[in-house]
Amino acid sequence: MANGKTTNRKLTGSYLALIRRFPVRPIMSEAELDQATALVNELLDRTRLDSAEDDYLDVLSDLIERYEDKHHPIEDVSADEMLEFLIEKRPAARGLLNRRFQRSSPANGD
Image (cartoon, rainbow, N blue to C red; front, side):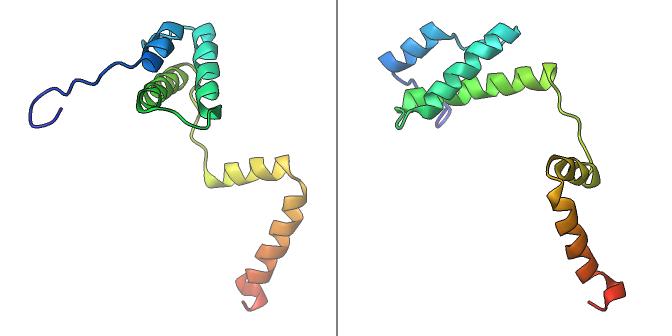
């Protein structure tokens, strides 16, 4: 909306083709989530998108995020919990972190 007037954008053939493949509406199932995710990945793999395809990608990504926030929430974790998780995934990091923190601890005069 510019200056209180609605701006009409021309619906391009590429946009309409995407709408036919996956209409822009709330995602209601895991099957629709899978379809939407596959289409987003396909668009992201392209080297170039026209402005209508870019708009569609933006809106579809928002719809995916909304569905996932509702149906697959990610709990907030503390920094300590995240660090512990990352260390569990890469045990060699524990030794590196121990050495780093031992060198910079006040007990070592640093």
